[in-house]
Length: 256
Image (cartoon, rainbow, N blue to C red):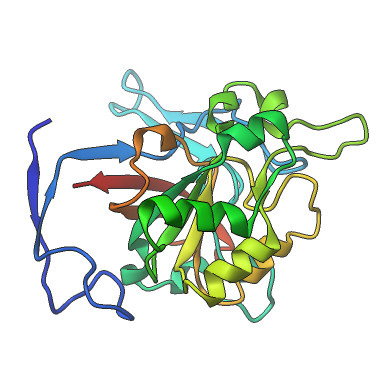
């Protein structure tokens, strides 16, 4: 792919709380889709609405092709917002545009997730990553690569429910999240599983911690194997649903 020069106004930073973390002119060498395709048989959270497509107009009859689609706000690759968990929390349509473009880093915990599907990100994982790649930048989005994206075509394996209906997939631990929020002041998190909380946590403790403020929470990401550990810019497209608790998201990674 031919590199593209993208010009950014230095006086309109990606996030209003920090100066632009990228140079005025950024050469993009790769652009990667981080969203799964949406189709009827994707893995769905238990009791969430089915994903449905219905043809409402055809080329033969109406002269154009049109479908109606239906899915839950938290289905497919999606964003969560604070009103998912807090009655006074912001809805997704209230997020400023500037919050939807942010730098990102990727933390790879696949070796631990392979041997323990209930593994949760620990502070030691963060510190080990920083020893190799430098401190996690403030106002960045931390993406957790568990390897679960490879199970997407098998809903049973992706959700990994046991005989009691308890889900088993890796996620982020509360201590690690508190370090990221308080000491690294991150803008949000993302993961390639169906939740930033481990599958066994029915209280959504990590989601609640992150969404005490209007931060970014991305779930069901894919193609994290195509990203470097850092120096990534995310562009997050969403449906501006009035009062939305979340939205399917088109997430792009721009790699200089």
